[in-house]
Image (cartoon, rainbow, N blue to C red):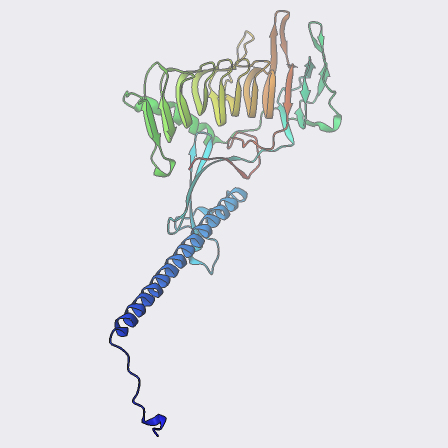
Length: 409
């Protein structure tokens, strides 16, 4: 009888070994692939987390600058470190004027996240009217509505009429009336120098044409300046860091313009146009009926500006006419159905009708009608609060803080 220990050991058949090796190789390959996928997913997750953190750092830096624009540490050349224990939280902020707004360029230390925004002044929502009329009495007539805080001459308000159209609005409570100074709130000297430099810069440029389509990114840091003479611009698409200089320009309704600046002697925005630009005119700006200047836009005129019927301006209108004339003259005229969202600052006689949603700084309000010429009169005018629209910088309105006007990139 044979014992179990006397049995010979079992042997593997030769055909099984290749199968085992093949299965082992397949398993190792699968494991290697899983490890590679895991590493890629880990790297992708790490990149996503870093990108998310970089974007959050950009937002944090923008918020700090909005609240504390005068803090020089935020705009130092080597950047601002948001968190002492995180070297990657350093953000570089660069600011420069763009028209009467401010261009803020932001980038993390590794340039993973960048951004460009137009900044304005945070509006003072409480103040809606500042009337620097000396010792005049401001008369209200027709359907006139004034809300918010009103800064008026010492003689305050009176309720009158134009022809047979008596005052039909709500009476203004005494608690809303404050004493105004003898002059309009002073604008920063830097703003005047900036406007004057823009108006004079075109004289030094050689004449050039304007392409049908052109886009210059704000992050490039270089402004493209073009000069043309008298022209009617139609079918043009212009975006970004572009300053267009001319003499007498007419912008047709077929133009598409975003965040550019236009400087000329006289500028006309044709009926039906819809653009987002800042206009600087040495003499006159005419906005024809149904034209729209989208937010954030603006108008600066040296002598006369006019908003036609059903036109809409979102941004600012500033008329710098301070000339004293013997005959009554109006340097700003706003139609009864026109609407301005933002700041209105007129340093000469202004015929204001329609709606101003924001802040109106007026030296003198007038109204010319077939019955005569009325001084210190607001007729069919609505001036109301607007806490949303950013004010232009340094123009005597707004607070010391910044407000985002637009994300340009």
